[in-house]
Image 1 (cartoon, one colour):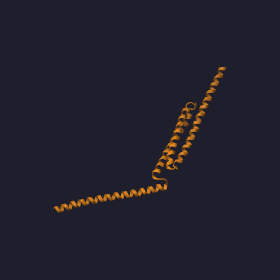
Image 2 (cartoon, helix red, strand yellow):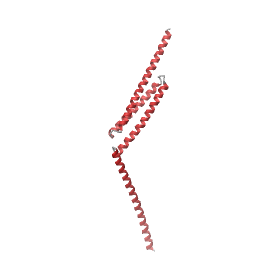
Image 3 (tube, helix red, strand yellow):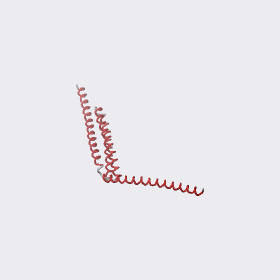
Image 4 (cartoon, rainbow, N blue to C red):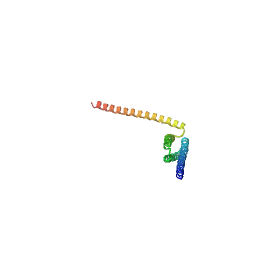
Length: 170
């Protein structure tokens, strides 16, 4: 009788331990979801920031990405001991996909922010810069055509001088 009682205490202790590990896993899940929410907020705010603040915001974003990756590692480690490995792995896989998508979104936002800072500030300035660029390219093309025409004219003049010299020599 005492032996059976000790065995059931051991089973209860293991169940309590598994429950505690599952609670730990769920706690990491909540942490990760908070980080995802924070990442989404930061991503939406970056494009609205002035260039000076944008650099700092991107660094903070990178730090948050690192924290999310660390949380995923903790999730992976804790999932192995929960007793529900397959279920936990599906959750982790979904979280990894979410994080990868956020990284792609981050790259797009950073690229757009870089483009805006290089071309100027707002859309009106960007449109104006693009219009000026087109005009400059057009002027450059015309200058190139004029240079070609001048080169051809010079070559024809040299040929005429040479022909005139030959006629006078004969």
